[in-house]
Image (cartoon, rainbow over all chains, first blue to last red; front, side):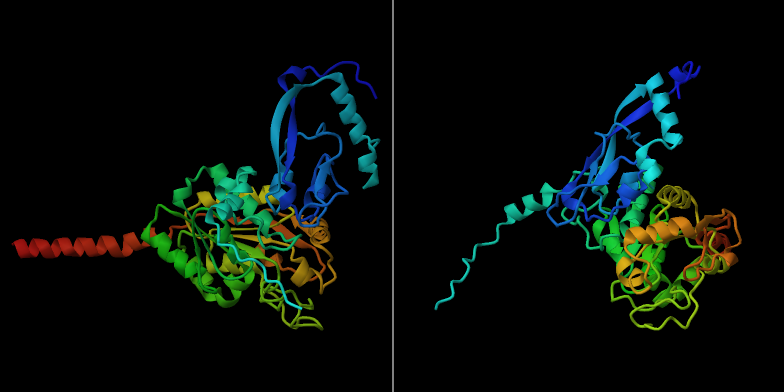
Length: 112
Length: 307
């Protein structure tokens, strides 16, 4: 679906882009961050950490992370946190991405 | 054959300290945590870490200076919070977290005193202290982490265990109904009563920071998954599955009657802020009824002596 123009107040808003930092040696593999990330940025990695658990890793190089900070709040081990990388301007591409996401064409959302 | 013994080297204090400092400071919350204590001993999937994180976030949001913040905790898994936080913390005897905290709050009213303890500590052995602190309306912030059993000692039945729930001491099902904690706190006279689960960390942060701003006895219950003690015998699964269970079964109803907030096994339950009211606290009442009257009597006596 393509929009015929940008929203009129697009310049007043911006999309925050976050960077996820994972301290792998602290992770105990409970999977809260993977399950409850609203944008589905994380997945379980196949490698082991020092304790023998599978720490989380990013799916798409943190492109979708909007720095909401839920992962750092819900992590019981103080092993993950987010940092604001930049506040991106809204482009037509972003709006297309968001509309496809909420129309459930995104594979990550149809799976659940 | 001769057994070769290991060479005994002397204890290297510097190397031990650098090993402790190496892992500290990687996370922004580490400034509130004692160096060398993380990783904590709580099981994978336990919700206690979430409640600790939300408490730190609430302290940061309210901008309470660390030297004005006191955390008192009792015995149990939740009692270890006092060992992990890098502020004035007290790890007290079993059930007596509230008496210690009452003394602190009365001796230094400027301090923001938080009691961080579990359901077995606050309601089993310390039940009487809690209801009387609530009746007096002492300036305390109580955060009760409810995991429905005595987790640290091996998953025994607790006063909050729901009817028919299985624990290690009730293998065929619990014969006693559990406490309804918000209703009890509300009836005893708390001025702020809320209940959230660890699936609602944002609401928990909001509730704790609201409670930290109030003057008087506040009570926040945080329902936490306990995969080892409560989840396994009741077939609730791992910590993650228990979180999904709380997501599906909790119903947010702010301002609801706490009488309806009873928890039954595998049934829907209510979460939310039940009560947010105002009432003069203990120190205010004490000043008004005792201190000011004694002072006025002394003045009369002194006047009589002078005459």
